[in-house]
Length: 385
Image (cartoon, rainbow, N blue to C red):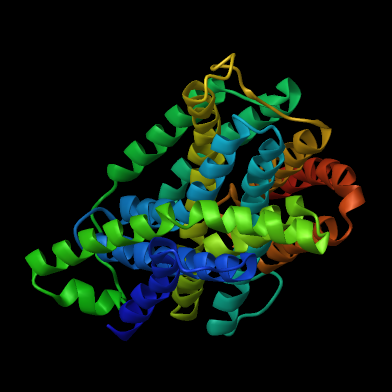
C-alpha cells in the first residue's frame, strides 16, 4: 500500500495550502496543484483498475481511460467556463483540448508500442500489436467523431449541437463496451494487487473512497493549476497558449501514461494500447462535448447574452482543431485493420514532433496527414503490411 499512501500524500500539500490560506507564489501554486492533480490521477486509475474485478473487462478499460483523464477534463471544463465571460480563455480551452489529443496519439501510442516490443525482444519495423475484434467499437466511434470534428473546423465554433452528437457517440461507445463478457485481470500490480485481495466489502469501500478523494483533489486543483500556468507565462514572456497546450496535458495525463507503461512492461501491450485508444475516443467525444456546456452555463450564470451560442474560434484555433482531426483520421487508418506496427508508430511520432518543433508548418502537416490516409488505406486493405 506504499504507492497508495504516497499518492494520497501527494494530494495533501496543495489542499493544505488552499484551505489553510498559506501565502504562496505562482510557482509554488503551479507545482503543488500539479502534484495534486497527478496524485489524484494515480488514485483514480488504481481505483478504476481495481474495479475490473467486479465489472466487464472492456467496460473497465473504458472507465480506466475515462477516469484517468478526469484531471484533463477538469482543466478544460474550467477554461471553457471562464471563456463564457472572458473570450481570451477560448484560446486556452481549445489549446488544452487539442494538445491533449495530439499528445495521446503522437507520443502515447508510439511509446507504449516501443516499450512493449523491447519487453518481448522484437524491436523490428514490421513487428506489431494485434487487437481483439472488440476494438471495432472504439474504431467506429473514433471515425465518426473525427469526421464530425472537421465540421467544427468549418463552422468556426464548438456548439451544443456538437455536445448532442458527440455525447450520443460516447453513450453508444460505453453501452457497447458494457455488453462485452466479464473478464478478470490476468495480472495485477501494486496497489491494485492488494486492493482486490481485500474482503469484498472493504475493497469496494476503499475503491469508492479513492474515487471521492481523488475527485476532491482534482476539483480544487484544476483552477489554480491553469491560472498559475497563465500567470507564469506572462511573467516569463512565454506563450500561455503553448503552456496550456502542452504542459497542462503532460501533468494531467501522466498517471494514465505511467499505468499503461507499466502494463506494457508487464507484457500487456494490447491492454495498454487499448486503454490509450479508449482515452482518445473519450477525449474526442465527451471532452469536446463538455466544452460548450461549460461555456453556456457560465454565460447563463453571469447573465451574458446568447446563452446557447457556440464558443467561437479564431483562425489559429480552427487550424488547431483541423490538425488534431487530421491526425485522428490518419491514426484511424493506421489501426483500422486491428494492427499497430513499429513502422506506423514511428510515422505517428515523427509527424507529431515535426509539427511540435516547427510550429509554422502545422497547416502543411495537417494536409500531409490527410494525404497519407490514402496509401495507408490501400496498403491495409490489400494486407500488404
